[in-house]
Image (tube, rainbow, N blue to C red):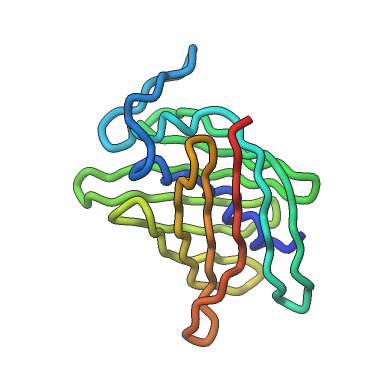
Length: 173
């Protein structure tokens, strides 16, 4: 699988709940409850089965891949996600900075690609992804289409134009 195909996977839903999910979700046993603006992310804790449509790029044909993303609460009032697929793995941390009133997420994958994005609304995140000697501008649009699904459409800017790279849809396991 191409490296970009699961950047969306790692971030899929990481911030969706900030806008679309109720903050009153139960805290799983043994987990610390998130507070403040991060409380709405509590819904994500657990595992999600994801299908990722990967656009044709870098000389490779379009494809669809599958994997699991698992979310846990971590120190610092943040959330960690881990993506596991047969041909890909990544880790992501997401949080909120009160002073700047912005959400952040940082991801690194098994291929050494690193991305960092921010958002003021918790719906559209923008930033950059660096790997293989290249840096690309990226944008993730997050949604919560149904009560048990999350979606992340990731775009990459190429020659000043945004092109869809991945479309990840995940269902709670």
